[in-house]
Every structure is written in structure tokens, then in C-alpha cells.
Image (tube, rainbow, N blue to C red):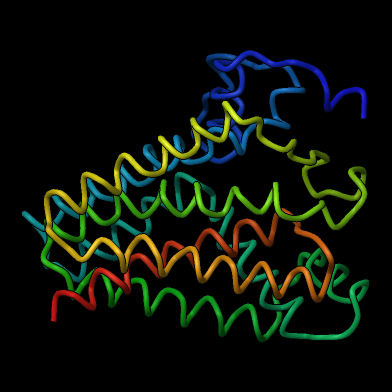
Amino acid sequence: MEETAVKTRWYDNIWAALIFFTRLPFWRVYQPPQASYKAVVEFWPLTGWLTGGAMAATLYFGSMVLPHAVAVIAAIAVRLLITGALHEDGLADFLDGFGGGGDRNRILAIMKDSHIGTYGVLGLIIYFLLLGTALYSMPVTVAALTILAADPFAKMVTSQLVNMLPYARHEEEAKNKTVYRKPTMAAGLSLTAQGLLPMVLLIWLTGIRWYLVIAIPPLVMYFLYLLMLRKIKGYTGDCCGAVCLLVELAVYLATCSQQL
């Protein structure tokens, strides 16, 4: 508990978030103090600017030289390479744990198991089919702008779980040995700006119905929050990764539904 109260510098927290949420070698440039890793959620949407930007650029420029479907697949692959499929692994574990059912301890044990099960496999297949189809159904420019907005926005929305729920395990049982600290009011304002600015750009440039992309994803998060509250009385890192991807997918589906 003492370590949680350690004050960390904002730029150290940014470096920690980039190192934690991507597989790019930022750690070769700078190593932030260990305490900064407790604050990575405070700059999670900012890492979405990087991953979303790389994914959007791959789709937009790739479509100039490749068939649209191939560019979509390449864009998804680029993000998987950058993140090391961190959140996809969380989604698979989440689906295995909650799909397998049982009591709280059994769900947590299944999620911690490194082996993927039937629910995880099927869930990832359905997720990638929906993701790829949603992006393919949109004009290239709209799809690229949606990616730029959806990635940080989903991370901003998902970060609220840290305030809404306690960590479901003991800190020493965490996969990364780190429990996120609850964001302060200043950090919350920063999170909001990081997540909303790209979304405002998307709404302004495309003219999509803002209430759909702003309202539906948080409802998805809230439903998953209720599920976690009922089943495991808290959240885990896998839960955060799963909620992030599903909230982001809700943005894509809400946007592509307006292209019909």
C-alpha cells in the first residue's frame, strides 16, 4: 500500500504506458521507475493514438496499392504486432473464464490459465470477423478516421473500471505483478481529453450521428461491468483488455451501421 501512494512524474507515466501497452522497444530509450507502472492506465488512451495511428495509416495508404480487404487485414496485423496481441489475449481469457462458468474462484483460475479454450477460440474468430467486416464495409477514409477515434476512446471508457471496481486478485497474483492505481481528478480530466479529442475529429469530419458512437460503447462497458461485479466482484487485466476490444468494436459497428 505504501508503494501505491508514491508520487510519479507524468512523463515517467507516459513512458511506462508506452512500454507496458506496446511491444515497441521504448525501454531501450528510457526506463521509468517501477512505481510509474501503477499509473499506466492514466495514459492508456495516449498509447491508442500510437496504435490507432499505425493501424489507420496502414489501412489508408495500404488501400492505395492493395485491395481493400487485404489492406484491412494488414491494418489489423500491424496493431497485433505493435501490441503483441495483449488485449486479444485478455479477450480470450475473459471469454474462457466467464464462458466456463462456475464460482468466482473458478472463473479467476480459468482466466489465469495460459491455455486457450473453446470459448476463447470461438470468441476471437467472431471478434475478428466482425472487426474486419465492419472496417471493410466503410469507405477507406471513414474507416481510417474511425480507427483513430475508436482506439483511444475505447481505452478511455474502459479505464473507468479502475474507479468502479476493486482489483479481483491480490497484487502478488497479478500476471504483471502490478495493480493500477485509481486516477486522480486531474488524471481523469487528462484521460477524458486523450479519449475524446480524436472522437470529436471523427464526428466533425464525417458528420456521423454522434450520439450513437458516444452512447453505445459506454453502455457495452456498463453491461460488462455489471457482469464482472456479479461474477467476480472486481476486475483483472484480462477484463480490461476484453472490455477495451468490445467497446472499440461497438464504435466500429455503430459507425458502419450509418454507412448503409
